[in-house]
Image (cartoon, rainbow, N blue to C red; front, side):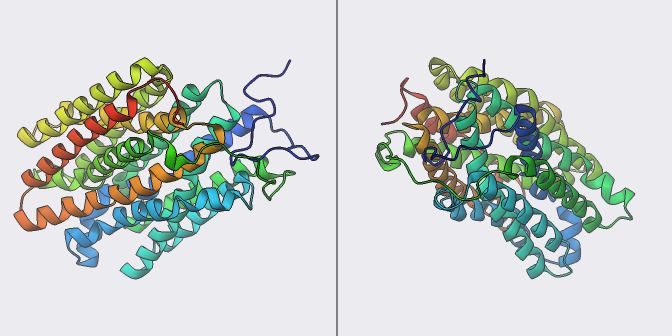
Length: 408
């Protein structure tokens, strides 16, 4: 007897099978490919945070300019996310994911360039590849694992967050071990992109590369009553996370911690997320828990930011709270997309909307945080800004969590 979550799933873009059926792929290979590709979605960004001081010293740019290394990928995620459903009408989602992962690798190569324009060009390519995979991978989970959305979303977010934790933790040690050049540390992640391409090849080999004829779709995503709240929640929780992912090492170094210590503390904040990224989606599969989870995780994150603001020299408890909050809010945002879509074909549409507008909003966070520091000369006002943004996360999470039915 075939497993219900693997038997003839409905295609991601709402198309239905023709006379030529999709070639099935063994579940372990699909899961392995999904995990390795997901591992590529954060290291190109998280691996830069602990190295910002060295990069700034070499390039001689302001804090606001330096934040482009994080802001540009987020802008790409916002601008290019809507392209994923459009490309899915022409090419299979498996094919798009393969090429997107290859683009991440190419962009990672260019980020080793000698000048800021070349580095920023590579950053745009990295952001473009991640943007498409951000939309397509969670939607693929809803398609291929309809009865295990929570568990598989947890596994996906575990890989994403695990990649960020690994990259931030080893950035400085790698730089030291490879001769003291920040480019050597960043260049390691090119190999991970190559592994991602190789791991995903079995999902593409022998299968159709073009999409099928579209089936009749249900109501438009624009008529979904949850679309706005889900989008704002995705945007503001991403703004909070990527802002401290970018600037936390610099904040800690200015408080007297070494670059290596700051990198390890950032890695700690990322590692803390791991059990929460796996547990929260499983809990969020129960609609009655959506609002309590939205409130609790936002309060946890806010308490950590407030603690760092008031007592930055004792960061461990505050980083634990910030990490636990971030590790909970991101998978909760993905679960909102999965459970608030009115039908399977609307998942990539809602995902593109939430990540498109949401990440465009989030892109302003690291820039504003850096600009506030340039303006005030300290980190108190930027951290207060981050605390206010966390309060907005709470409000939008409650709005997205209310009710027990998908959007219609």
